[in-house]
Amino acid sequence: MSSDLIWQAFVGLGYHLTPNASVASGYRGMGTDYSEGLFTLDVIHHGPVVGFEFRF
Image (cartoon, rainbow, N blue to C red):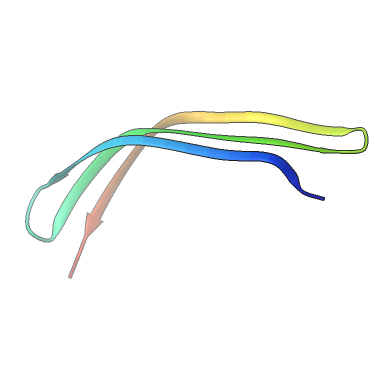
């Protein structure tokens, strides 16, 4: 059992609000191509991503 192909891609921008806090936004895509016997799974997920980081 193994996937034929798994991939992901991300593009984004980040901004430092303060020396300890930053925000980021972007777009991410992930794909899986898997098959075993008669079962086949070939999917692509994609959409926006938003994140916040605080360092202390």
